[in-house]
Image (cartoon, rainbow, N blue to C red; front, side, top):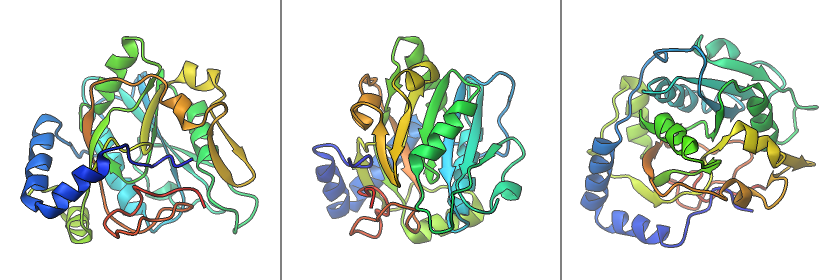
Length: 271
């Protein structure tokens, strides 16, 4: 099951932005006008979070991506949020490097050569979540400041599982490096655009998530939900979609990169 696959028609958007870079830049500019990204140190409130972001992580190579993602989560407005980072590693490598407001869980694997198991980390984080809505989120995806509020509003309307992504922008390596250095995200750059990216950030009410058994693992492979894989998590989707931004960089643990180096994870699948 390819949990990071593209939907039908997504390749057309990607190719159009590649052939006409100005069109892709214009799309990114308009998307972030409607759904701006904020980058702050600490959420405005940590009391009684309504939404919990859960991020699995391993290693120091993608620590800058993780920290940038956390700053965009801290910038959420109109609904209280928290974030649980689950590190699946022998040593506690990132714990001391995380912001104080982030909750940390260590799930040491049985050996150093044990493959990264995403479902294990997400289940551990979901069990610790205090929010009624859980966002299973990648460690390199920046989110608009209204993302959590939109998810929460849709859950209140009766949706148990939500995937709001419309356009995902993959930034070039140089743009990503400058962003890490300055903290300023420019939309006046060419980017690879993916439409309706599957996976990467999926939300579920905590009640419904565990009602279907959460995510299960067998051996060292990610299987998805206990019945029907990731399709069960996408059983009920909101028609309203936001625009998200992926930072570029090396391959994440356990996921193979796509053939296009500017798309490090969009077409990844379990090995």
